Amino acid sequence: MGTSVLDTALSPSEIQVQLNVSAYVSLVAFTLLYFDFFSLTFESEVSRYWGTRITFASFFFYLNRYAAFLGVVPIMVQYFWTGGSSVKSEVCCILIISFSCLIAIQYCPGLQIHHQVVIIGVQIIVGIILIMRTYALYGGSRRLLAFMSCSAVGIFGFSAWSMISAERLRQPRADYPSIGCGFSLSTPMAHRIGYGWIGFLAFDIMILVFTFRKACEACRRGGCARKHGLVPTLLRDGILYFLVVAVANWGNIMSYMFAGPYLRGVGSNLTTVLSTIMASRLMLSIRDPKLIASASHHNVDEDPSICDFSWSDGYEYDGRSVGLSNG
Image 1 (cartoon, rainbow, N blue to C red):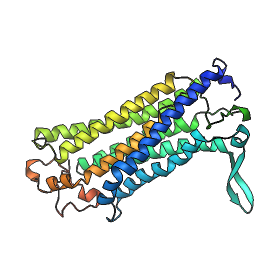
Image 2 (spheres, helix red, strand yellow):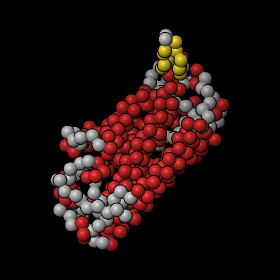
Image 3 (cartoon, one colour):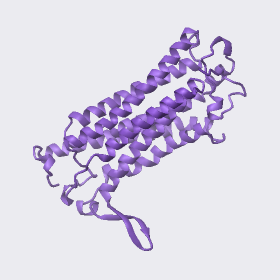
Image 4 (cartoon, rainbow, N blue to C red):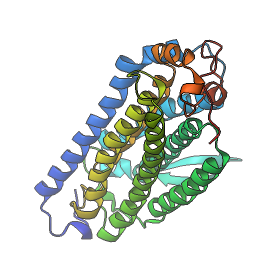
């Protein structure tokens, strides 16, 4: 592998070590995604979502699950494709009209673009799920929905712009490693992408604040007396989601700001996978039969802050309302 202008301070062995670490961390992320899908949550998905009508909530549940499931396949190719640099630099035509190639791109740069698109797309899908969940938690407050939607447009717009507008340096043909399409990031480029991930973290913090505020209100009314009620479940899942994703995201941000050229963004795949896994579990837990049975027998007058998820996802909770707050 050749040496680019970004790597003049690194020996070939140091570059290879950074590439290996990046590949291993990504392998952990891919393994987690498919292990969770097939071994931990697929049975729950079948029992709680299959056979029910498609609603706004279930549509985004499926989109979150299967966009990540299918979207990471080219990313795995990006990290573990074996072949010479000449092959990886070949041009692939991706849009042909009237036997003319209108859009063509090299294989490795194309995989890298796909990687960024999947990351941004998954984060937007997860963000919609979190907004929908918080909207339901607040009993359909339109003011809150408007605030969260405007905030999300600004935050995700900034994050997407930061990632997409970061200027990529053209990589020489001899600069691709024998395994994968590893590439280095300059410091300004890495910092700009890191700012995009800071935006995602800010959005998660906003959702956590709203979730914690509503849960505290419910606890003051006695809604936390039941260990397995709706409010304790929402509080538990919300805090757990934030802790898992925020810790991973913070590590990812630090890699963009301070890591070596080939280690910048080493945690992006892991953070994205954890986001989609935790979002899936948020949606699955709402249809937990034990939770539904508990919520269906809950007295609305005792805790008016409990929300009704039946109107938000069209799922029949034993034909009874969980309780609705219009705050």
